[in-house]
Length: 173
Length: 118
Image 1 (cartoon, each protein chain N blue to C red):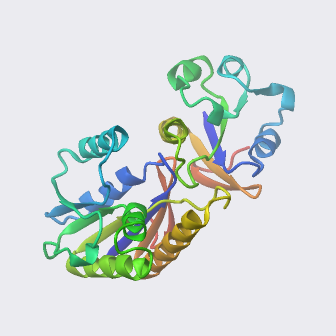
Image 2: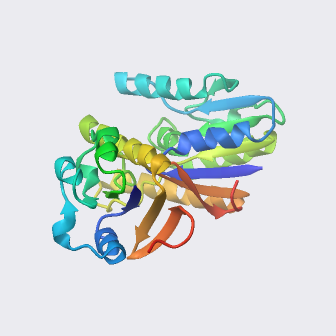
């Protein structure tokens, strides 16, 4: 089963996504961490998310890029956080934007195939005007296409607004 | 307390005025005014609002807040922090609200609350 959770900054999407994992009944819980930690803010962000997950029994696998090369415990419940970071790391990273869409999507498909449940967290970045430089616009386009592709494959798609899930696909969890 | 959220210019305040029957002079624009007025618009300008204090003074207030977290993450750390703060504030308020609606193109979507509002 694949599920997609989106929302704006500070919307409560991570907490909701973790709830989907804990409600799945699957014992083995894996957190797929995509953020490259490089400054104080990202350290604090990681710490905040660690505390939120504390006691929920997650093991953490770092995958800032090359998700397709990762082997997951069969049948686990996996939380990928998040698609926008992973896509940015692929898009602006060594391998570059050529094929970034395909690499990320192949990674999501492979992870979903290995896991009993894969919950993908992504970001709503598309409602704030389009006055950005060409690189950012190209990244936004790639992420938007990935969001759509994952949503098309997902059994449940949720947008979290002020901590409240809006079910776009799959009904109320 | 009722929370109305949505993008800028979507008709949140018009909707609140129509639902409550109040006029523009009844709309607070600062936390201080909001202690005694029935509607408080522009919550997104007050990310550090002390909601406990406000709700103790005015438990039935209608709060209106722009959704500000749905764009490209800003390069400026202070702007990033502000969006995050406004989002968290709305999450806390939504938990306590008896009703939460999201206004889109002037149309309401009820996120929380039973039955019709007025």
